[in-house]
Image 1 (cartoon, rainbow, N blue to C red):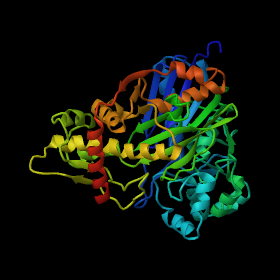
Image 2: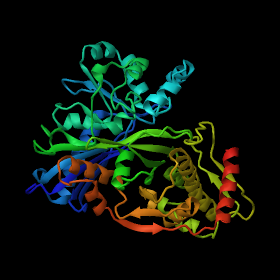
Image 3: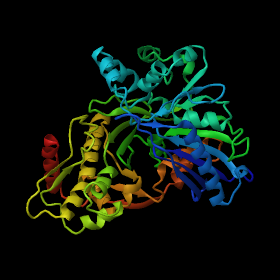
Length: 494
């Protein structure tokens, strides 16, 4: 690779874009991060400006290179990870967006999903795509754009429009409009790809009235998709060579390469993914089946469960109740008591996700009496986050028929030792925190490097991944059963 001794990871998230320069030993050499605008045109609608996302990405790349003290020509490869289901439509020739992007959180297609369920399509959707009929995924969003933006269908039929999730948009822009491509992990979140075929599915395209002409090519998660061309922040000719949705990138960045290995990302919500190997596992417990990645012709599948509220519960204690001044204060407050007493918190502030799928559920504190203090409430909130993740882990064990040998964690909240220890206690499994908790960026860097041979194989990745701390379960089986009993009673009442 000569002087090309670095890899650039681009992590395009829901509220900010981030670029990270890493060396061969995965040392972080430079970072750039920038927030961008969230648009809420109507209740339940959330949009992003594709051009603003692109401008923020260019800014972050330039900042990361400056802070690393290197030139763009020192980069061997670029890997991309992204918010997954957010949907864009643009003119193929000019790259001009047809409309703002519809964000994964957007609920405008709820009625359409209801109609499709009433027509009896849900079983077919689950069998074909591994997903449930929900506005979360991209398929109904692109149908809305084609149906609602004036002239969109005629332009699509004439081959003038390109659809993409954010990975597709970034590669298209990075390569000077040359490459219209997505990877299998992102395509598996659209409700348009067959989980077994790894190709756009005719029945799903027909059900959602999405023409093949707008769809990108589906590629592996590590291969050269194109070369940079016409960027402000980078010279021409750098390979764009790795791509995965954010949660799959975190699973890869955690080196979860063996079936049964799992990771949980603690962000605004919490996402638990388990590697289930080279054959998809259909969930009977309310989880999603998804593609992890495709490398060297082999596809790795995952089971996924999401909790809508994790870090957001701590933000609510801070902003809604004013119990803490900053999010990091929760650990000290929770430590003012030895236990949460009888207090249980169900974090259903936005309904309950997997495995319950109860959009009508509401947040609940149970077991409060005259002796309850702020400390008890804080500790119960941390425990509630861990208990809902325990529900997901149990569902995964049932679906996969596998135990979880070690539970790898990442994201902002994992710096909280109290939360991590309780998570180990309630799971009865070791919880492993890595040295670099930004594993989403790490996964994108790994894939980008593998795509050009900067790293030779996943074994190289495993060698450079390092644990920071292992939390071992200390709770007795009796105590654990007691905690889970109180939790299950509270969930019924939420």
